[in-house]
Image (tube, rainbow, N blue to C red):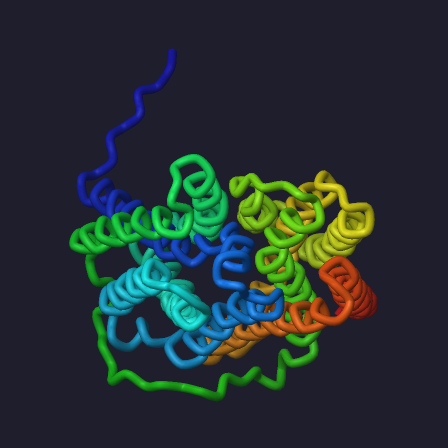
Length: 399
């Protein structure tokens, strides 16, 4: 005889519903940051941007995230979650407006900078809100929901923008009008999300994140490994549309956002599944997987074929998800309790800096040797760094 499930108490049901709204708002904010990804090829053509300028425009986003994480990553702990979330959504709307008005690189850069600031506000505050709105016994599940909201939004932005641009027309305007409509709905949704911080403190701006001496060794090894995955992801997001259009001669905009979309979707899968793997397997396994992914991406560049690029994108995301999903808990677990949030913020700061710097390097090198050769050179450099990280991980595994 099957049992009849008992209804949840109304207070718990209401909490779960508000958590769902908070997760959707989180997704909307992250979706907006990835709308330009399949459109870089169009910006290159319509505004006459060089490959260097395209990659600089992308890198500005990572710089905005890094600055926002550094200065404001702790802000929602002090002034409350809702003010930071509202601010993040408003900044996301301003970013979409800048793209709508863009007639050259200046507004594109402004839009990317604002997108980065919005993402930096949401990475901490959005995750904390989803966790805060969960019963204590469901906090682990809430962390998974936050990961899915974050990377699900990034995936939807890259793939959805390409689909809208390809099949609904007005490719450099319509995706942002849709984003603005979603931003308005997100602001309305925040009306039902309660404040979860009960003790407010005076806001402080911090510009010098540090790492406790007790974890510096493992921090360097694991942040460089995860950062290598972010560096490869940045190369895909900034240059895949140029490679697919110029080297593979495809003109379907829906295809341009697919590599980045596959990567971000797979990051979410990797971070969810990593909880089922022992740390001693997940950390080196992530590095090995990223090496395989970079080899596939290099094969795509060398052979001018699409399939290895798409497979490599999915493998890259999954492996990076394992690396980051196992690496961050390992670092924070060993950090002093009073400095865990600071250590986590510094970890993500390293990731986003490594997302930005190689992208600009590829753009500069492309001016000299072309996109394929530049991509191959940086793929080799990232693979070398990953191999060194893997050796160090294996050497210190027993510690």
